[in-house]
Amino acid sequence: MLGERLARAIAARDTETMGTLLADDIDFKALTPNKFWEGHSRAEVLDVVFGSWFEESDHIDELAGVETGEAVGDTARVAYRFHITNADGPHVVEQQAYYREADDKVSYLRIVCSGYRPLPSELSAENSFFSS
Image (spheres, rainbow, N blue to C red):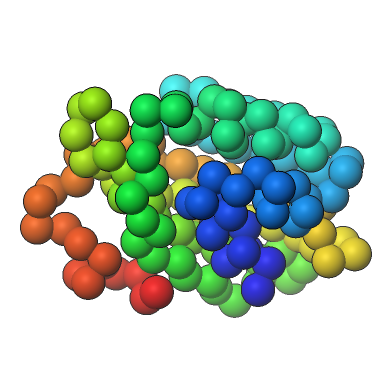
């Protein structure tokens, strides 16, 4: 499924793969805790995701879960959660994405992000509400 491949590409910081999943003229909007993001090209989306959201010092330890849901009309949904470690310690980040496909590429993408939340030591992929 396209949404799961998108989540895996972000987790792996794989700009090449993610670039192949996005339409050239994508309609992109996203909301993180402190900012609204917008892009109208593949390059703009890649810059936001890999140039702004995750710093070099943020190590994405794992994709802790991916969940796809029933489409809403022509719009599909994917939720994913990352475990991230940086200088401030371990964190969890969850994003919900809604997307539309055209010619096997994401042509419309809306993402809402939880932000970096402290990761309690007892939390792990095993007790996550997501299924892997």
